[in-house]
Length: 159
Image: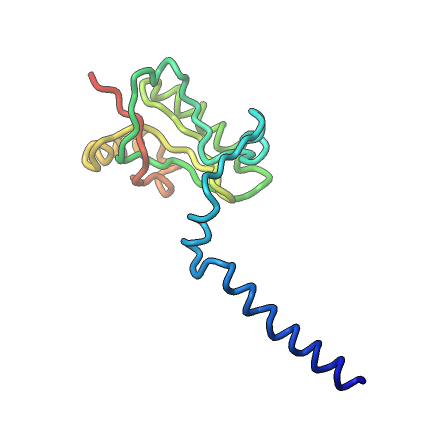
């Protein structure tokens, strides 16, 4: 009797995977395509909760960038730090100091975990940015070790 139960159980277990395999798509792409259209609905405040201190916290006002478009370009990185206790306040303090000296340049305080960065300007070419680096290093010699040109998405306003 025990052998008969064991044989029936083994046969049932052996046939289950075969029947399941015939119902499942073969590849992940087939599985995604067979799922149909997927839509995600979320409350307005969800992005604020999901992306705390999001990718970029622009400190430039919306009026300054009205009509601007995003494109690949260069910015000057003035500050970068990952000290979780002081980096944010230091980035904003350096931003205020920089804005007093260069009010015509846009400043961007950016948080990309775990780094807080201060980047300035929107330059279409690296040469434009390098010219401004010399001027910034003369104005802030204490930051000269940190100042460098970096590739970034810039806001470009057609004139």
